[in-house]
Amino acid sequence: MNCYIHKTDKRLRVRSDFIRKNPLEVAKLIEQLEEVDAVQHIKHQKYAGSVAITFDDQEISCDDLLEILQSHQWLQEEGKSSFVESAVVAGTKTLVKGITGIALSRLVGPSISRVIMSV
Image (cartoon, rainbow, N blue to C red):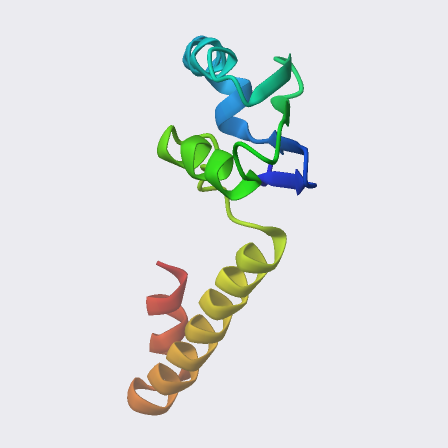
């Protein structure tokens, strides 16, 4: 899951893998945030990995809240590669293998290069 952030003047919603996989750490920060006068309401959906914070924008800005969440790794994304990245890696490997095969067949002959490439 990629990190999802939706912000308005008075509401911030964050969805991330960190929130879903670390409910105890998230709950601790939510308790601390609830102590802040500017924070009016917090809704935590554990299984969705989502937290929505309603706040008074005259006392605290959305960017300030995002900084707090970032400092607690809430916006952290997993290291999973995307479909495009996986396709590029696979395509690069195929290209390198093809170029290597051509170079070997020219260097040592086709029959020996087939033996080497099959290993």
